[in-house]
Amino acid sequence: MSASPELQGLAQILPRVGLVSSVAWDRGCDHALVDQVRVDKWLWAARLYKARNTATEAVLGGRVHVNGERVKPSKALRAGDTIEVTIGMVRRTLAVTAVAERRGPASVAATMYEETPESRAACERYVQERRLARPLGADLGERPTKQARRRLDDLRRAQRRVR
Image (tube, rainbow, N blue to C red; front, side, top):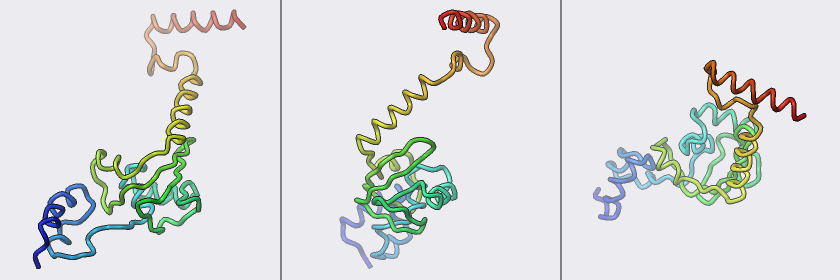
């Protein structure tokens, strides 16, 4: 079975980015194009979680909502869906732009979703709060040198006098 020239061009690109298996293209299967994928698999493929098991636990723990509803890991996710993911203290709202069966490079994973402006602003606000909340001297590294320790002691003494 021979595919059209357009499909042959796609057959060379899509397997490399993990959107379609090359075996399915070689067989000429029509079901090779993925239009939906499990939520836990998508979270892993989009590189929001390092391991698929971690993504599954997040979904089961209620930290993932699709279109405003709490879902199970097997819920089918399609392009156009809105997904809310809570990672640590940050809640991210993402619009799904593509789905993939396999995990690909980070450059491809970044194109699988688009973060809302409100979510991006909240994330930046959280980063600023964390940076300001760090204790004095936290940016010195693991163990300060003798000179750095003396400077830190001087800073702490000066801060005590102000209060």
